[in-house]
Image (tube, rainbow, N blue to C red):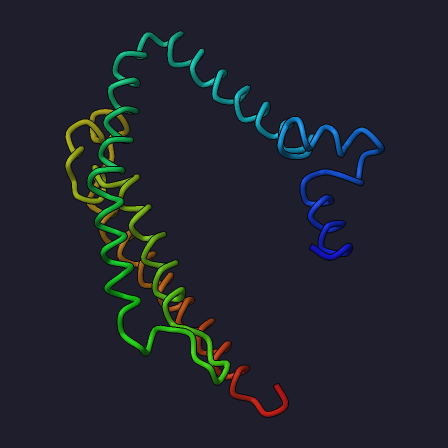
Length: 176
């Protein structure tokens, strides 16, 4: 490793930015002190959430939901979206081009992922599975949620398509 690369690698690990003990800190801990501070902050927020769940008396249902969500993600969702991504990447028109034109894949991935995430979070309302409970709780119907989700999905893909068009136009300009 040359001297400049080593210096930048040390700064990325937290060395050389906080004094003479920072190098030792990075060797012992494995990352810079900001990493540890961020990790502690995440654990504080998670601990607060756990105290609220336990305080509300719903810890068993939350634990079942949490484990079920992890298992569902790892055994069902991960293979599904990995397969979908492999199918999307397979056509040569979606790959990076040597002429500098941007690949189309990320302009399909991002809106699709955001749309799927919205559907995953709001599916009881979008698919009208919680109509009775929702009407009882707030007095409104769940009927607008499907149309709103579809419109958000359309807008995400249109904006992504416009960004792709601008990037492709900019890549095709002379002098680039």
